[in-house]
Image 1 (cartoon, helix red, strand yellow):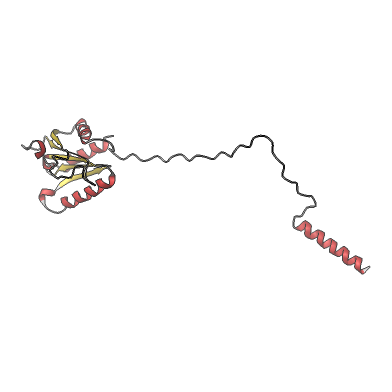
Image 2: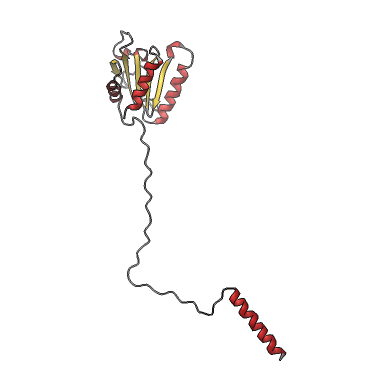
Amino acid sequence: MKIISILLLALAVSAMLISACGGSSQSSSSPTATTGKVSPTPTSTPSPTPTPQVAHAGQTVDQLLQGLKAHGLPIGASFTYNAANDLNHDLGRPGQYIGKVNFKDTRITSTEQGAAISVSNGGSIEVFANTTDAAHRFAYLQALSKSGVPQFVEYEYLDGVVILRISSQLTPDQAAAYRVALKALP
């Protein structure tokens, strides 16, 4: 009788353990085969991140000059440089501007013509292949302008791949009008 009591107790404990652990007396079913075509799970294609448009990328100095004129700025004679007549010998060189035009502001009296037109006669537009080259040139020009040497003092504005240099003979408000017009160009 003692043996039966121990067996019944062991059986009761086992039953309690099985039910406490979530056991089941049901057998698991085996997987069933599917019939027909199996379609792959569609994966989402990530949308491309839009590349921000760099200001003035692809524009020539002459297009930019015409845009400034269209904004009513008093631009007179101008001279567009090429690699052969660039007095700085920078045009087209690695890391330098790829386009340059100097122009006269009609409020400044000067007699210079052609390649002799300088920033002090009005201004200059320099276009670069990329923003890194433009930023390097801009830092160089800023250092010269802040050097304290009067011949190098000018207003400089960087917008995308363009540097706009304006004569220090103009007032800050007159120079700022060029900056505003440049920013407004497409």
